[in-house]
Length: 144
Figure 1 (cartoon, rainbow, N blue to C red):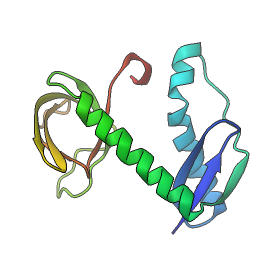
Figure 2 (cartoon, rainbow, N blue to C red; figure 1 turned 180 degrees about the vertical axis):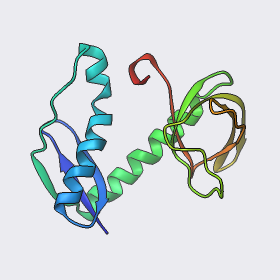
Figure 3 (cartoon, helix red, strand yellow; figure 1 turned 135 degrees about the horizontal axis):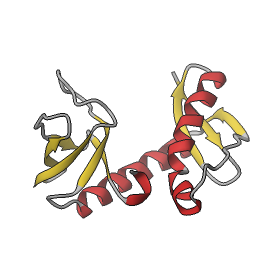
Figure 4 (cartoon, rainbow, N blue to C red; figure 1 turned 45 degrees about the vertical axis):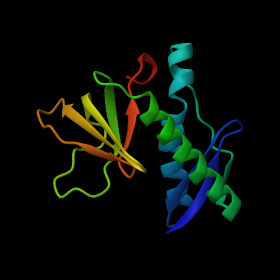
C-alpha cells in the first residue's frame, strides 16, 4: 500500500491504496464525505471532479496526520454527554461497532493522552470508545 494525494481544484484527501485507480476510487468516496458541508449549504449534490491523483510526499503525509490529530482533539474537547455521534473508525475491538453506526454519548472520561467515551449505540449495544485510536464525528444538521 502507498499513500496517494487525491484532489479537486479546492480540496484534497490522502488515501492508502495499491495503485492510482484504487486511489481515485477511494478518493472519490473520501471527497464526497468532505464536501458534505457544501451539499448541506446549497441543498443539492455537488459534482466532484478529481483533478490530481499522485503519490503523496512525506511532507503532505506529515501535515495530513497533524491535521487529523488536531481534528480529533477538537472533536473530543467539544464532546458533551447527550451528544449524538457517528463512528468513523474503531481500531481494536474483537466485536466492533460497525462504522457509520450512530449513538448517544453518556459519559466522557479523560485519561491524559486518550479519552474514554461511553456510548449507547442505536443498535442497542453499550460500548465505550477509546479516542484515539477510535474516531468519531459529532452529528450536526449538516452531516446527518
